[in-house]
Structures are given as C-alpha cells and as structure tokens.
Image (cartoon, rainbow over all chains, first blue to last red; front, side):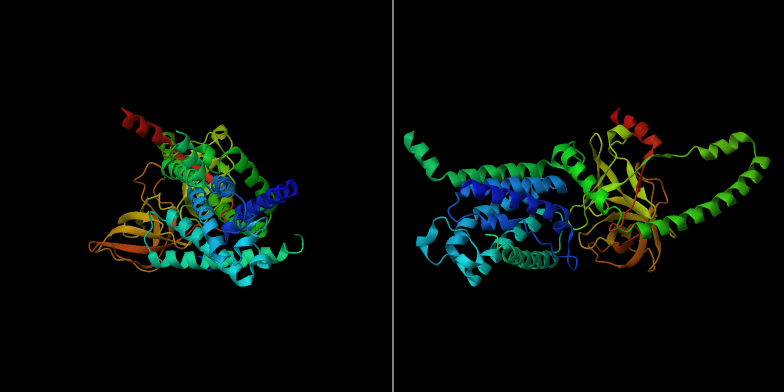
Length: 170
Length: 277
C-alpha cells in the first residue's frame, strides 16, 4: 500500500469511529434498526490486502468501539469474524479474476448489483453476530431477527450514501 | 520442522483469526460489571474525556425543558418547606428534642450530584457514564437516582468517572413492590424498549390496575423503600403458572436524564462487614 493510501484509510477510520460512537450507535430507528457504518472501512480496503491486515484493522476498530460502549468483546468478535469472511465474499461477487491487483471494492469497480450483494452480506454477517453475541440472556427470536434484518438494511443504505459522497474525492 | 513453519505461513490467516477470536471471547466472558475492569469500559480516562467533551457541546440541547421542570419542582419544594416549617414549629413545642433528632437520622445519605456524560439505550446491556469518581467518594454498589425515580447502580469506579449499570440492563434485578397492595416482585428489563421493563415473580392472586404505582421495596441494601420506579402498563407474558408478570412504564426518561444523585446506605458497610465475618 502506498503511503497516501494508508493516510487516507487512517483518517477514514478515525472519522468512522467518531461517527459510530457519537451518533450512529445511539440511533435505533423504530426501536430496532442501528446502522454500523464503521464496516465501510473493512469493505473498502483494497482487494489485494492480506486477510491478516484486514482482521487486525477490524480487531483494532472493534476494540476501540467496545471501549466506548463498555461492551468488551461484542464488537471485537463480530468485526473480526466479518473481516475473516471478506475474502470469500469478494470472490463470490468478483466477475473477472484477473483484475485482482490494486483494485478496491466500489460501485464503479464491481458494478452496482455485485457491490450491493457484497455490502449487504457483510452488513448481515456483522449484524447477526453482534445481536446474537449481545443477547445471550434475552429470549425473543422474532425481535432478534427484526433487529438483524433492519440493521443490515440501514447499514447498507448508509454505506451507499458514504460511497456516493466519497466517490468524487477518490 | 521446516514443513511445519511453511504450513503455518501458508495458513497464517487461520491462525491470526483464531488468536483474535480467542482474545475477543476471553474479553466477552471475563467482563463482569462488578469487577474492576476499568480499562475496557467507558469509565476509563480516554473515553471519559471524550464523552465529557461531547457532552459540553450537546449539553445545551434541551436545557429549556429541564429548566422548566426544575422551576416546577423548585416551587413544589418551597411549598413543602413552608408546610414542614409549620409542622416543625408545632412539633418542637410539643415534643422533646431527643425524639425530634431521632427522626432526622435516616438510613440514606446523599454522596453527590453527577452529570451523565454518556447514556446508552439501544444496546442489549446499557450503561451510563457519570463524571464523578473515587475522588468524589463514590464506591461500587451505591444507588443512582434522579428527579423522577431510580436510574441504576454504580458498577465500576475510576478516578474521575464511574460506570452506572442502568435499569435497562438485564444484569440488574431490582426488588420492587406495588405501592397499594405491598406485594413485591423483581424488576428486570426485557431488552425491547427503553420506556418499559417487566415486574416478575408477582403472586398470581395479586390484583392490579393500569396506572398503579410501583416503588422500591427496600429489601436490598442499595435503595431505601419508597423510591418511584414507574406505573403499571399492562399484564405481560407469563413464564410460570403461579406467578404474574406486569409490563411497567418506567418513570425515568433515559433519553433526557439530566443530573443524577448518588445515594448510599449508611448501614451498607455494616451489613457488608457482617457478611465478611
């Protein structure tokens, strides 16, 4: 990775964590839907990035967010597993195996439909994990499923917004 | 040996994954709000500072409403003071000073007033961070209340900040009773809405109506008897045939908490010493 790229991702990471901690995690639309926009960084790392680096980034972000919410392990575990699943998901939606190189996933490089699938399954993986890990002691499967589905959709909408806003700069 | 190293390098991502997941699970399972795990929760210095900063900015929102509420409660209190003064005058003439001082010795004392710097309501386990810590004499297990009722219990204390385990947290069970009939049960949050909680383990024959008041029972060493919890909303799900469960509308509004009071039971230390023996 070039130095400018590392700088860009660091700033993006800080902005996303601040947004997540201050604003987004306190949102619960209709009492259920919470957006997890910080996943955007994990989604956007270049395709060629080693899974070890992706998991390390996810681990650090999860730990930071956990620290702010007094929920040690919840976000960390969920984001590490999501990061681990990134490679299979990319392979699933990538159409041309040959342009694997320095490409980073976006609407432009993947196409709208494949990127939608990629963003949605990433968000769904994370939401499922985070709500199941959190609700060890709760018992209402319907409420849980509602939370997972709405939060994934909300995360997807926010990711698409971020994608649109950041399109011009990169 | 060489083949083993080659194998590890070839499958390094699996090993990294296993290591990270193990660390996360250790964090997840070891965390107990009553342990001193100050570094991994929002009572630590970094998160505390950050939340204070944000609170300084957003603290002005909603001040007008809080102001009106304060003025209302102020005038109410002044009214009470005048009534009490009259009563004291009457009593001091009638009774001896000894009996009067007995009434003043109460079980609970006020430790201080604190401002919540972070309140979560959307997690499955919710906590509140307040800007008072061990420097201000706060200890674990003290009660936290505000103008409208019970807020939670102090769980972790750092130098300048404390973590409060709120009613909106299934790890907290509170002994409560119906004000009118005196029957008691145990209040627990069902993880759904920040406005409601469930009062469980209420005997089946107990009659109640919508709007009945629910108060603390005084059976725990944290809260004195008679603090407001909320009102009966409706009869809720029943897990066991012998017991009722009531959906309770909480009197505390976690979306605009305002300043909170920390109270301590004077007899708590004595009770705990007794337990230690």
